[in-house]
Image (cartoon, rainbow, N blue to C red; front, side, top):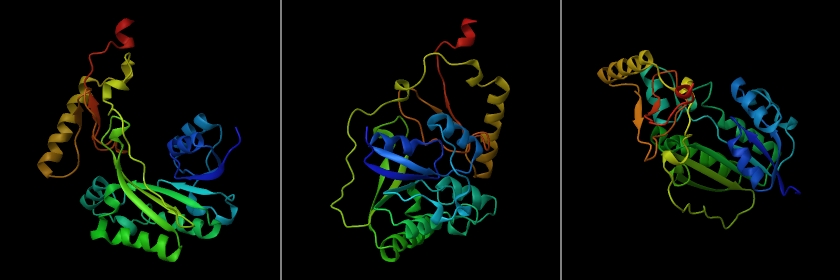
Length: 265
């Protein structure tokens, strides 16, 4: 099938956005992701390894493209990320020099390559972070400084996947467009619709790990900070899945009665 447009995949992760754009007729001509484990999964999914740190890539070296796609890091702006950084005395938002300024790398690439359109994604809290000042800076850059026709909306993914995941999507066009975000309709899925019936034993918590998670949650509750595990009902949807697993005990756990492979051995 002849590809209809060319796009680049920034902060690519394991390639979720790429799948969507390829299914819509696009051809990915460049990708960037600095996490080595995500790079490995991305290569397994698509057969090519993303370039590394976007801050070290000259915009002139990026191929011309019609659409720029980027889910720039959310930790400096998310409710969970900001709470964690405050508790540790660390800077957040644009003051986070490691991740908070990566939006401006998107800006320099747009300025150099002038794509026909872009799609950016981040956490819902981006809009209200720092009393709205962060979002005002972003909109000023994209609309006034770059001259794009920009639209945005907060979308909850629970209409298509069994997870409560609110994210803001920012869409921009080089030329004004009569654009409306599509309405997501259909039957809302539940966890049981996507869970495997047979689960390997390695995915089941040991008694020791379970006790440690309970201790960890009680410790954070006493300090009024951090996040503990949650137990998800397989007949409902999960809370937002985070990138903090194995870091602070914020796992979403599922109690299953399915037979594991180990039980059959």
